Structures are given as structure tokens and as C-alpha cells.
Length: 289
Length: 345
Image (cartoon, rainbow over all chains, first blue to last red; front, side, top):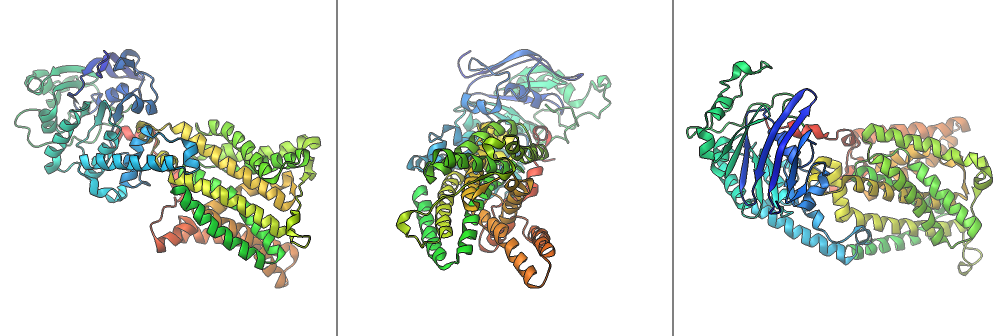
């Protein structure tokens, strides 16, 4: 497939004895928003890590735009047109907001190390161009006025916006968003939803999210994982109607859970789930990659 | 624009330095030359640690490489001084590239250990090849004052001019780098390697580049020090030198070029000043020579307590935003696994 879509085929990932992903397949189409949901520890982040080459699967393939991604080194992803945000914030705390976003645009810089060393006009021009692009990306996420602030002085939700701008500034063809809404104030969620939809106008977006109202309102297709297995795929409406999904979220199959952990705390996904849950603390060791 | 600004500032400083050097005694001129040599080496180290977030306790070894390389070129080939200094920097940079490849795989204390080994092991090589490197005695390096300055021109003043000119050029280049996207990328890698890689930065390449730059500066510093002291010998590049460089960088304020100057001033001026004070108060030479070491420790403790970001960090606290990095930040790096579990909860 050479059309800018991400294709994960029959991927299995094991960490020691734990099977984090069991024969999972997923396709994320360009200019569509693909959601990955599931209870804590279902393997969502592992799936994203596999998708961007951080985790090498025991079997299965991952391709983007026709290129195999397995084993790709992280810094090559940007060149392939893939941007990924981290579950935390991952901003550079010693850099201003504008500089943080400029780092995201650096791969497009044309001036080399030598022109930087000698401070040539070429390097200065490059810097101005990077700064303009960074300011543009900041404006897109509604954070243009923060350009000269240090990340540590910002509220969590604002930092997430800056991290989004850093991913956006490279004009990626595929955006992987790991819990973009965590830490976002409740009343700004609709705005985040609009922002994600706007991103999908130019790129394919894959989003992991706990906030069900956000997922249900923005996603075109949703993949539901539970204990490393794909249990449902479909439109938001189809997924909400799927009894297997409800069971996974309610823990109806709780008796089968071997580790004796409490059932997950999320609301069942449904029209009534207006009250978004941030999700409980991650189950230790379950979702790591 | 960047270049013009930095060159302009350097020219102003150069004029001031020339005027000052004319006023100073020949011994003070000698000290000025010494400070200039150390500034280059310390500036390279402060860029490595403060900007790229890697540590080196072994930059004295790169000074040794630069010192020996330039001494050999001067003695055997008789090249002009600019070329001799360039050789010192380039040879050390090559050694830094080789070492940097290994260093890019090491973090924090492990990197400190590896560079420490370099500082201990490398200078002893000179003893293994007494024919080429002069063994324990080392090689003597002498340069002459150019004829147009006249026969009575103090040689140490010429040394001060030469070393200060070389130091200013090195500082201009470092300032250019620090303000460019290279400097920004280094700071990004320092703060968060995973996020930097995801933003498209080649982390290992940037870390190696920082080592190369740092080693080149140490090499140039070593070459300058060789012509200032007139000798290159294993005894001049001991572990103590490497630690002194690190101390000067930390004391001055990591990641800041003015900090390299403050650190080098302390490094050169405090010991001689205190030895003199001790001697003039009737201390025996054995006692007065240990005063500087004690004072050094006291100064280091006081500065670190009062200004964790060094002298430059302390000055910035009063005059502007602090950008120097506290040393402790180096040992709190974010491992990959932390990213995948952390959340706001």
C-alpha cells in the first residue's frame, strides 16, 4: 500500500512470559482518525510503540506508505513523515516553548554544521524560517502567546498543546497521539477534538485515548484491545453496540482474569458516558514497552 | 548577522586585551596567556557538559593529544604558528570522534568512568615511546617573537597576544554553534533523548559531534598551553588537570562561555595568589603550596551552595535569566521506560 496508510499485520509482541499483543492487525487510513481504546494494560501503548519501530514484534509486519517500519530507528521516523507524541509531555525543559517547537522542525533545516559553526547568513536564514514555522504551528494549537515561556511554567494542558505543535510543525503524513487529552481541562476537550479533526485534514491520525466522549466524537474507526487481543473494530456506533466491548470495560469476564487485579475503572462507552474518565493509574508493568 | 555580532564583540575584547597586556608586567602577561589557553579547553568542556549533557573527566587527555601533536609539528616541520594550533585542534578532534562513538553509547556515571580511564591511561603512552615523545622529560617547545615587534618586546606579551587571539576565534565559533540549531539540538538531546529522537534528531550523531567539538577545543587549549609553558610532558597532563578543567567549567557555570572565562581565571589566578599570600605570612613552602588546594575546595563548596549554576548562573540570577545547567541535572536523565508509563494521574 503506497497511499500513506499505516498497516499493522498479525503482530505478536511478548515481554518475557507476558503476551502484550496477540496477533493484532490494524490499518490506519490517510486523512482518517483511527482510535485505539481498551482497558489499562490492554496493549495500546505497546501497539503504538510497535507501529513506530520502538518495539520489535516477534511476528507480523508493520508498514507505512509501503515502507517496512520494524526496527526503524526513532530519528528516521520524522523523515518518513511520522510524528509521535508521548504519553507524558516530553518537552525539553531547558528550551523555550518556541525553541521546543523549532526542534520539531529541525529535520527540514537546510544549513549544515559548518554554516552553523561559522555563523553564515545561510544558517541565520534557516533559523528565521524555522522560527516562523514554529510560530505558525503554535498558532494552530492556540498557544502562540506562549512562545517565550519555559515549559515548566505552563499548566499541564498547555504543555500538551505545545507538544502537539512540536509534532505538527514537521507536517507529518501520520500522527501518532498517545493520550492527547490526559491533563486537558474538561472544558477544553471539544476544542482538542476540533484540533484533532483539523490535523486529519492533512495527515492520518492514530489516537490512543481514555476519554470516551472525545474518542467517540472524533474517530472514524475504533480498534478495541483487551489483554493484547483485538476484540472489536468498527465505527464508534458499532463499537458502542458491541457486547464484547461492554464486557471488557465492565469486567464481566473478571473471573477469567488471572492476575487478580481489580476490574478497570472506566465508564462503559455509551451515549450516557458524558462524564469522561481520565482512567486510573496505569497497572504496573502491564503497559510498558 | 550572528557572525557579525560575535566578531564585533570579539574585536572589542581584543582591543581591550591588547591595551591591558601593555600595562601588565611580563609575569601577568604570562598568566594572561595561561588563562587564554585554559579558557579554550574549559569552554569546550562546558559546551559538552552544559549543552549536550554528556560528561567528560578526561579532557586533559585531549589537551595532551593537542599539545604533543602541535609540539611535534613545530619541532619537526617548523610550520607557522596558526597551522601548528590548527593541527593540535584537528588531531584532538579526530581522537574525540573515535572516543565519541564509544561515548554516545554510555550515560552519566558510566561515561564519567570511561573518560576518567582515558585521562589516566593516555599520558603514560608518552613514556612508552621516549624516542618520539621524549619520555618523562617531554619535548621542549619554543617560539620566537616576530622581528617587527623589536628586540626589546617582552616575549610573554607576544604569547599573550597569540593565545588570546586563538582563544577569541575559538569562542566566536563556539558562540556561533551554541546559538545555531546545533546548540538547540544539543540542549534538546540533553533534556530528553527519546523526545529528541522522535522529533527527528539523530541523538548519537549529535552526541559524537559534541565530543568532537569539545576535544578540538581541548586540543587547541593543549597546543596553546604547550607554547605558553614551553614544554609538553606527561606530568603536565595528569588526572589533576582533567579534574581542574571540570572544576573550572562547573565553577564558572556549565553551558555558558563567560562561565568558562570565570572558571579559568579562578584556575590560574587563585593558586598563585594564595601561595604568595601564604609565603608572605611566613608559612613554609610546603605549607603555603597546600593552601591553594584547600582554598580551591572551600571556593568550590561555597559557590556550589550559593550558586548551583556556577558563577555565571549567579550573575545571571541578578542580571537576567539563568541558563546554566546544574551539574546534578546530568544524573537525572529520563530513561526510555519512564515515558511509556508516566501520566498525569
